[in-house]
Image (cartoon, rainbow, N blue to C red; front, side, top):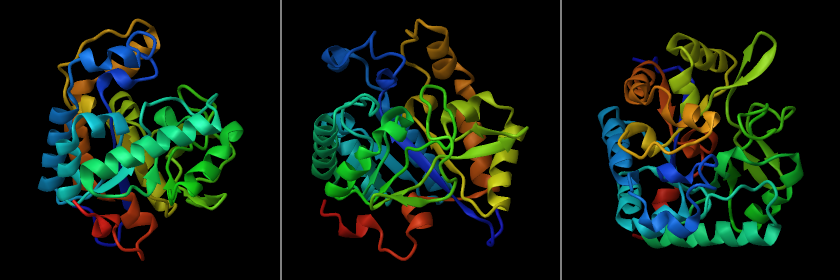
Length: 288
């Protein structure tokens, strides 16, 4: 069990379907999403059971599309006491987007999540961590829409986008919005990303554990994120390119047991528990 003096890390779940990946957006465009099998519910239900077993809160970044399609699932997340935040509506990439389109996407997601859960999300995460130095205008839009914090910036290069390699590794403020950066580790003089579920599945577990300890020894909370489809393996294997196959299908069976080990060994909480401990939980203002 983690010690009572240990750093509390942030456990986050990006609630999206298996076909929302940037690697599949050409194969499975939004026009055919409603025809695809949905596995968000069984995946989220497995996560909720684990969190209940370990008495741990998490932040759920919910895609507006999922909230509109399955409001009862999202309502259950809020009802079980977890923090509800937004992942946008259509899982479009911020990079290359127009500010007006971004505003409409985030606003639609806020409305869908509020309708489903009774909660107004105050956190945002960009799909595929697609915020870069060229999209700082997105923080202006978030602030104007009432978003208090963002958790999208990789302070290094990630698998898809350049990230913001020189960005701080601890929470900081950008244009009135608190940024809670995704976690990177120091490895052979290089900042190595390890936040996402792919890294949990792909890296040797002893190395992944070492990365979290490294962050905690520096008094930094680790920020990790997982997806419902990583807990439910029965979804179509349709990725055509090598990168997509590696990201989607590597060691899926290891997700749950590895997460259980992390829940056993380290302290975890929702982002609002760690970054905003003096503020009331957002769920306290929900009106289901």
